[in-house]
Image (cartoon, rainbow, N blue to C red; front, side, top):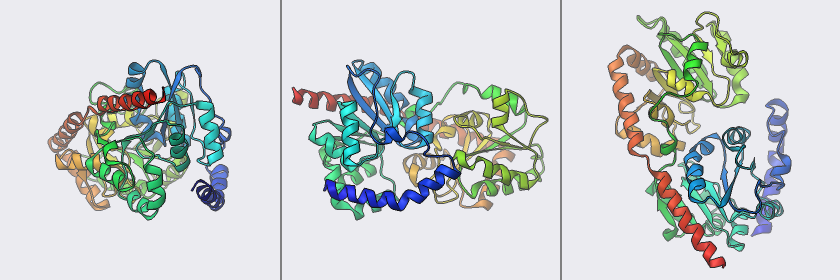
Length: 435
């Protein structure tokens, strides 16, 4: 099986190489970290036991915060090393953890590369955020009797049918997983269908609820308000947007500005991908609205001239600050079929939260919010205009949605403790078997 997977990887790499080259040249991605991707990874304290935690991108890295803190307290004799796949994920991991933990790009899952990574890290357990089970990683860990634990596990509506098409490979891979800590029973059932042993699948809820900030001021938000000269103006935030949504938002904003009482409304757009910042700036320029790029204000530690109608949030790590200043939030990548950005964060902050119908990456959170009337789903641009206008024109309506959404987030917290307890039991059990 291993040789077959290696061949498939080579074919996929050849087919994907033009995309890699394009992104390196045009988007300035994939230019660093190649030695790490080829297995040259390391540790700060190699004499300690080791927990290897892997998270793909920013969302998973953020979701791991409470888990990492709790594991440090519960397992002080273990070093925690952290890997990420994407450039943005690694940047976020470095910002949060680099001073205390080794942070590196996730090695390619070729058998020779993954063996090198295992030999250098010598992990005692591997924690994979949400789904990231890879064939050779699982196989090598199984042969070396190293527990592999899927944490905050989920398999989206879009991913599940794809995995089912390769059930022979997925069963071979998932049967080697020591434990799955799933967000919901539906996700648990999907892991079992793909080959995980039923007795090794537990429902713990989502770690993201525990990382969501539900009280207190967001650090830096007051300064952001000063820099954009927000004062008493109302702010509508489009957060984590994808291609096509910024233009929809700008068109809706233009209509809202013509409504009685909304003449001073302001808009902040925060695209999900940094490589799209310049593209979105061009879209804003074409509208004729006066605007400012927040990166310029942040770099110069300055304030905007006047009160620009539109603020482009073209920095990383500041989205929560924009949410904290908003009256109403639209969560992006949901009017286009991209699966959604994180709608938990604005809801937790007590902001009236809206999003489109394409939310398959956040189904558990969406179901909980919509079931309790703690958020609003809009079908298209016209509904986005109608709902946003209602929210700004009827503050009591918007405040009620926001309060319920925040309450729902608080009610679902507690997954971290269950997750840590399950990890410790699994790690200690397998380590005892090694003795």
